[in-house]
Amino acid sequence: MKNLLKNFFIFFIILLVVSGLFYSASDAEQPKDYVGIQKLVEEINGESVESVTVEGNLLRVKLKDGSGQKVKKENGESLSALLKNFSVAPDKLAKVNIEVKDESGLSFWASMLLPIALPLLLIGVFIYFMARQIQGANVRALMFGQSQAREVKQDQDKKKQITFKDVAGVKEAKEELKEVVEFLTSPKKFLELGANIPKGVLLVGAPGTGKTLLAKAVAGEAHVPFFHMSGSEFVEMFVGVGASRVRDLFKRAKKSAPCIVFIDEIDAVGRQRGSGLGGSHDEREQTLNQILVEMDGFEPNTNVIVIAATNRPDVLDPALLRPGRFDRRVVLDEPDINDRTEILKVHSQKKPLGKEVSLRRIAERTPGFSGADLANLLNEAAILSARNGKRLIEMPELFQSIEKVMLGPERKSRVLSDKEKKITAYHEAGHALVTHILPNTDPVQKISIISRGMAGGYTLKVPLEDKRMHSRQEFLEELSVLLGGYIAEREIFGDITTGATSDLRTATHLARRMITDYGMSRELGPRTFGSREELIFLGRELHEQRDYSEKIAERIDDEIMHYLNEAAERARQIIREHKPKLEKIVEALLKQEKLEKEEFEELVKA
Image 1 (cartoon, helix red, strand yellow):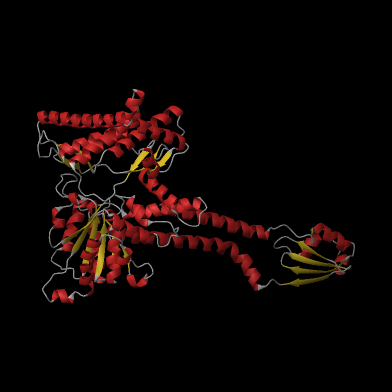
Image 2 (cartoon, helix red, strand yellow; image 1 turned 90 degrees about the horizontal axis):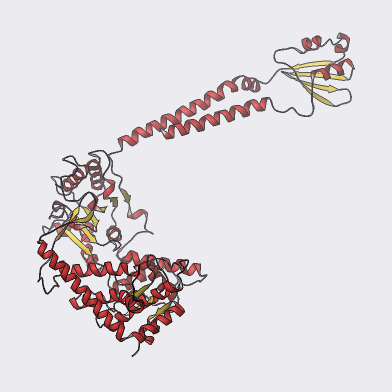
């Protein structure tokens, strides 16, 4: 309706403009050689007119001195009658040579028909476009239940074709998916042995680990069509539309077989059924039911492999995960240091790096970074280098980009008072000193009292190697590191500030998880406490089901306080014993605001 009104308004304006131009052209400002009828009468009476040529309403007057004039007369009135009305003497008029010329057929019909035909033509064009829009709306209404999947044909876009060479790391996942490529390219050798082609592959991994990229690489390696659709695109406000789109998607896929159907974020429609929300006609459940039928129903989908991606496999319906649906589950872990190095090499291919740049050092400083984080890191470094007027990306820009991705941009406009700056320096120095002294903590890479993101300052710690498991002693020492800034403020100033809020919250959460999740409590024994349940309509773990008594809850609180007090006392002893080193660190921070690893280790040497 909005488009119809808009088009009507446009055509109305065009009609007004064209009509105005047409009538203004007919009544345009007269040229300088046009004169009035009274002037013509005077000239005839003065015997200065040689001839008059009549062309419709136009009189072309030729004077005896050789000059010419033009006169406009009224429509439908003859020249003789006009001059008689102005009392021109017949003998004077007889001396003038009068010639009458007929108008050309084209100009005559144009003058007669254009004022009528032009508005009618514009109205006809307007009606035509309105009819087309209404027809298009009807077609779109009929297409409402059709799949919105985007099809990528590999032979049409070879330059942008993605293969396994473009996917760094995830070696095990690539090996698993190479078998899928073999199923698509040469299914005969598997069928001869009675092997069934897998119908579904579920890619499970944290956000940014390359699930979508891997699915595209499978299609690129197999040289087959690739249908891409998000799970949320199935669901609409009308019941049954999602199921209709699923049917249409698989219908298109069967016509293009062999092919790959990729459903991103399948947990949008694949959540466990029977939640009691939405009733029996819940649109999401109907869509899921249709996916289950299409993947393993009465009609076999030969050479159509469904690849789905999710970072929440725990909420998927069990029917999706059984054999015959998603036969294979491929887990994409966070990249280790070697994988991060390879990922950085892939993403830096089109970026000019300085000779001193070591991607291995960047990989060492980025534990826990996903492939998307590393790509973002290099992009931020390129932007920063361009802002600094450099032609190459160098290590300082890369190091700054790491901190920007982790903590946010520097907030240089946030000016701290001398007192706040001093408190921040002691706080960060406390973290760094406790980290350096304790044996099972990660080494300090950088200390800064310049605000980044929400942090007033920060101490950057990076492990020497990737860790998959952590010991109880490591957690206990990490609690002391988290409380190091809090204790340093208390020991030096005799008071505490709100700057330690985030540290206290993190320390409390870690201590609780040690007891309730990891079974690291010596008092409560090797068991877990409580189970978290997701509230489906909110999508967050906001509800915890208690499987322990109030007496046990009180003991858990006592254990948390014991761990935190023990960690605080450990940090207090370190700060009191090594106070001269603490003062050196603070003095250097107040002077230059940042300390790199080498500068920090020089200050804390024994």
